[in-house]
Image (tube, rainbow, N blue to C red; front, side, top):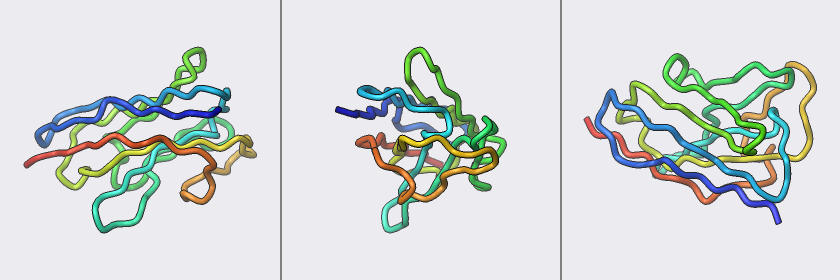
Length: 127
């Protein structure tokens, strides 16, 4: 049974940092198979960070230069380092995974492209 379990969320002041983790079990996902999303109240779920087929990282414009995605293959764990946090980063953050690797240059940015989801971890940034 595939499971994705996020952790690391919390409440921080603007300018602070958090590191989210997503531990996967039941399947060894490829690097381009996993990504991070977030959803604020009343808004659609949006892609935050993921990997292109070929290994480069993708970031939403709103987080470029502040967030960093990484992965520990041995631990089957995905991370999201979030620095210089802003109140507008407040949201539930989700880890997502798919089972098929991407061709070079492709990236999954839409929720419909993923098969598995974690339960989410809340990030709240106060001004």
